[in-house]
Image (tube, rainbow, N blue to C red; front, side, top):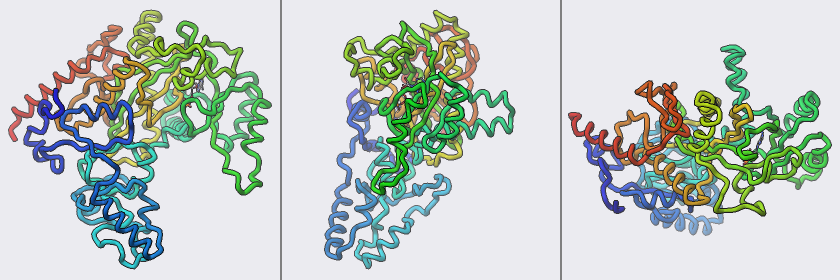
Length: 527
Ligand code: ADP
């Protein structure tokens, strides 16, 4: 299909025409990434890239403001707060203001731009030098419909953005509540305690999917107590906010970390020394499930389109990432044995890029089914569903819910030799760089289906429980399949939950069917 070709049902119904700012026009997107997502956006029919960080009108205004500032010797608040300077003075249509409150709280009148303390003082300082129609610290995000931004961009801009009704942006404001290793565990521990208080011990056991974890330095003393109770076990130390295996090491003895601790946590006598980095120390899973003698973890893609009500889509495909070397506890300092990150494994001297180190989740599910039976395999994947839902619920009340925001998480799950799934971590920016053709096809499919679920083209009815490779598993409650006897064709297991991780994923065929059905329904529904 050529880029200019209309997609089936695209903007053709009356509903679509009435949809306000998108109307019968192309969808304008911005993208901070240079990887698969950009390919997906560029290839999407009816979508048009908005190039450059600043719309010309805003750039001109900023230059003008800066010249005026230079003249008055003042530092511009816009320079401080808005590094990208995205905005459009004309974009003051109806919408909500992202001020760190939920969107329902953000019901500013459509053409009224709220002032912040900084904007007020800035206006005061400049003595009215700013053009009266453009408050200096408030971006009016008006020239795009969809923004796949990076987290840094969001942090720098979210609090000063004015988003219009139809705009969609990647990431919730405080996504780190789930994606920082220390905060994820803190939130899980809190919900576990609350569950135990309100529903009893048995129910709270359903939270036993994260290894015992402490934050350092703040919980060092509790950790030492726990360490002494379990002499001889292996612990893993991880920087709370780093990724790709950076800064991680394993240890068995307290003295193994003494030198490291001295270096990191000496009292801050030197005022120029940085505050020590936060780490988590976690019980190491010493008995991972091995295939061919190798350890692996499973990457699972989860799309959250709303936290209130919680609405969660689970992608059928993903992959298992294997370590390159056979697993052994003899060499706990060997990252190639113990860390399954591709970023680590691809630096191994004997790494073969053609062979790679990945299996599709379908292949893993088939393997487990063949080896342990369909019930055991089903329990593994149900356990992963439980991890996803409980972890999201643990931050449901904390995440700033904004109808403009969505998140595509990459969950990392490890199986132990009893086939119990353990949550290792959750990424808000899972790698979208492909390591080979299959990986590229997978990521291309996931990202296209994220856009298909978000449905800016308004091609769906909004009632779908499956869109391409994504299945709706939670919609303010567990979602069941329409057909209770529906089968996962990989392992022929019937299930009533609408979750099909590792099951057959004929996404293109399915998309054709739902678009045709939705179009027919829209045509037949009297307007
Ligand atoms: P990063 O964000 O740096 O990737 P992770 O927490 O994902 O950090 O850990 C990196 C890798 O280390 C994981 O993919 C997994 O292979 C291994 N790992 C991490 N925590 C544990 C653990 N508690 N037990 C066993 N292996 C672990």
